[in-house]
Image (cartoon, rainbow, N blue to C red; front, side, top):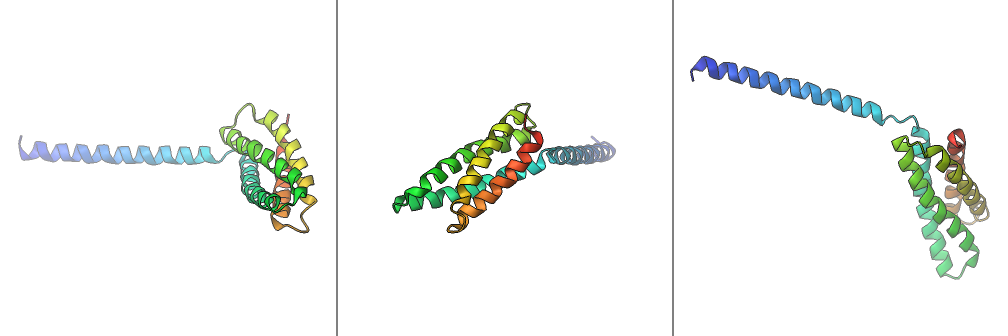
Length: 146
């Protein structure tokens, strides 16, 4: 192999590397564009509901442990929205055909949870935050519920 062949081989290799990099960048751009879900507001609302719900449930469990039985209904409704809103977030990200049906169920659960949390919002910040996030999730669900 002479110098010229080695040099041409190196140029070809560099060209292939640049083409590969450009293709990877284009794929990354397409993937990023796809991530901009048509359900972005619902995904965000469901995620917030899960996050605030986890805090609320922990607070309810603590108070139940202290003997405050008034928190039982709140804990139950929060536990339900945690399951539903986690699934809602996942299906919304996938743009699933099941999303409108699940949104209908989640909407009902969010309303129930909001109502339960309102009973305690003056005494417990966690309940207030959870109730507000449920109200926001309810509104987003309503936009697509079947």
